[in-house]
Image (cartoon, rainbow, N blue to C red; front, side, top):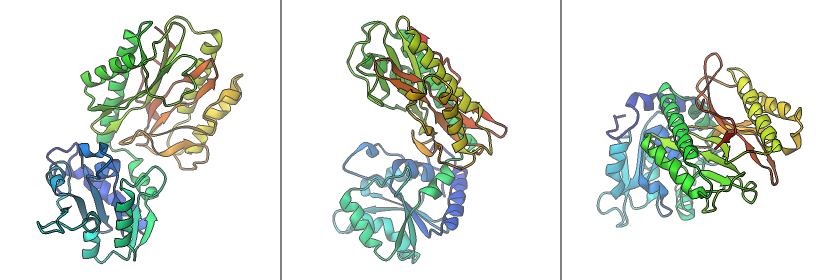
Length: 395
């Protein structure tokens, strides 16, 4: 395993991740895993490419065997990028001239070549089949790969993946903490610039500009909406609709810093909220902090979600609980990771886990009301990575 010239982490970081993955592979009886997604190839190998945004190509497939050997399959034109960004030395490429220039004749043959060399093509192979993982392959690429592995037992590897990825290292936490700082700076700048008649898109641009000024490498297309006709449209992108006085403005999402995400919700209003809007928002905010106060090592994830629900059930707004039974998600190299903050999850919280917790109320014509915070589980409790003003801001 080598240092990656353009990498965000030293080789030692990837060696630690590999050892943890090998432990999980042994636990789940996996002879190898095949990763096709941007977040898993980045997490386990450091690979980066702008082609992940393409609908016509998969820039990298990472194969890892139970003894810790790794190979990357890519196109011929992608080999230098793989060498520059990843910690993997074994780079294999495919071409469209039947391998006459030294490459493999198909993508799938480049992917399984390491398995063939180790006699593992009839073994138990883990793939991204479930729980927050997806294959980044076309239908025909997938079918071709399955033909190459027709003698193998294909199994879901998501449990093994999340057992490793859910516990963040000190280096990851540094990146997450910085991303959260950038998020706060951007949203604060956007709200400071809000004026009546400003469009949602203009507000988004103000926030995004500050993200980049503060050090972000990318940004999510924020969930940003205001007004009665927009309150119900969860996760809707910003529109060119002008913002009027008296409308609740919701900003949801965040930037990406060194491959890591922040995801928070902050709300404001030009003018004054109604008494009902103010009270509903405050209960949702208090419910969020009730859940946060329950977060400490050893407490089950389900208990955190149940704590939020119990708090809300005691309020006069219980019927408007929009996320009963689930109040958030993990966060890292993906904006939505596992484990989820779900009442059915018995997994105990562990130091290094990072969550976005976001209980909220929705009432037609009143608003989608609440906040979202990013929380790190520490040895003796928690750290709020997003300790920015969280009240309903009067703009």
